[in-house]
Figure: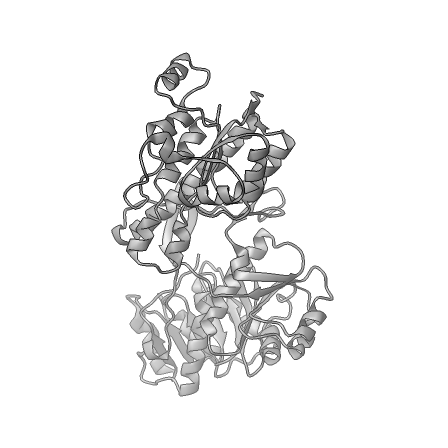
Length: 508
């Protein structure tokens, strides 16, 4: 296993937190320590003896600290091969010491960018010496241990305690792999920062926070989530989120964001809304959303954009559901909802961030902007002789919000504050409409005076004709068909109103 005792170390870190036990162990084992600047001062304050890197190299830290460790005596000490006679001979000739352990914590580039700092400040947080030390030590893992992040201080501490200050080849290879994870992640974020302006056609994604999932869409598929879910949610109750839970939660929070400033509630199943409503209270909005499809709501994902109070919790406690998402829960409501131990309760702490969507496709990836556009009444172009009433305009705006987040081909039927039904994922728009009409009838909704939203244009007038026969009086659609006029003519002949938005919202 090529066990090697650590006899010398180079330490140059930005964050010193939790470094004290490492210094204590190195002192205990008589390890010679090289260091610079603030790290040197910190080690000395811990009672450690330090050889300044300037003493090793014969050069001071220059250019405002931009150059400290970039010197052959440092990198030679890390990179020379201990089992190569030529390397050993040259190291002796040029008085280059062996460096067995390198501990680095890079300048906080990501954090500096996230803080909104000036470009000058951001550029100064691009670590040069540190990243070079990491790569050099990781390359020579046969002889050198590299700890490339403060997150690994604890692992190193355990290793030094268990192995009496020594490491095995397996240990060093592991830390080398971790080091290249750190360096590649760091470089990815630097590239993405510069590429905001340059738009070089390259896909660079790095996410180091991973959560293993029970399985993927099906039990025979492995799965993991990469990202910081805890930035977005506090999980207050329930079992671990599954792959399918996460897909539905993403759809739920995307939909509910459309109703900012209102009290809205939505119930989703397989990423499609089976109930959506806006009301004066969460309890009322839930009851209206549930009424739209009392069958599909079973085992669904629930979401609201307002605090869940006791009245709302009482209303939904009898329903079996997988997940409930809200910005806040009253204490008594939380206590009631926690009665089901597997029921997942998520407190959403922030809106969704990021504007890119990435998906694997064929032998590569497709990247697109998130669909952040939603058309409101001000965007509607009336194309029929009869204009929608103000109530109908509100209803069309409501239906369009739901339609945007529903699988294509889709038709949504509603009034101004409640989803009546939708036809989702159909191969023809006529099928989607008929599905929606039949579903609305099965749950007791009268469609007389209802409105219809379509995610894409009508190539023929058959949909408006079927809608008219069902009692629907107003329609919103993007338009753009060479036969738009046929649908308009039918509406004009039968007293229906139609507005167009000029924007399609397919969701595949």
